Length: 115
Image (tube, rainbow, N blue to C red; front, side, top):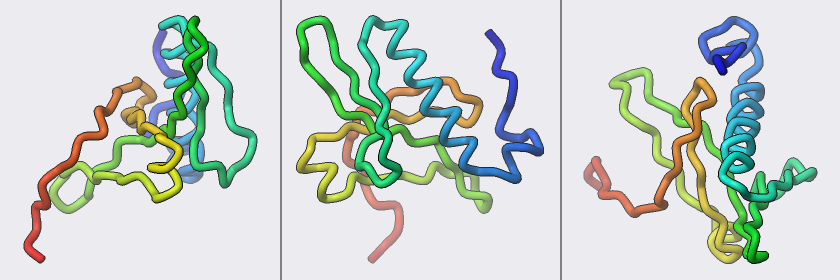
């Protein structure tokens, strides 16, 4: 199924929050297809977006992020978990701008700039 809206569409450029909503829905859809039970957080300030539960009852807290790139050199902008997200063992799940999910392994990265 082809996405109806793409990030480059005028509607999405005027309302960047739609990019996040589309990413969350795409990830929820993908996880449902994989057999997870999916719940969405109702609190906008919640440290996670989705709760995934498998058949054995194990739950995972997921924070969905859209893949973002710098305008200057098109390099990926990396995200890091907040302190509370680390305590709650939240995992990132990255989705590209067209809403196609792309899982992230939460690996550490080497700094590209000198301090």
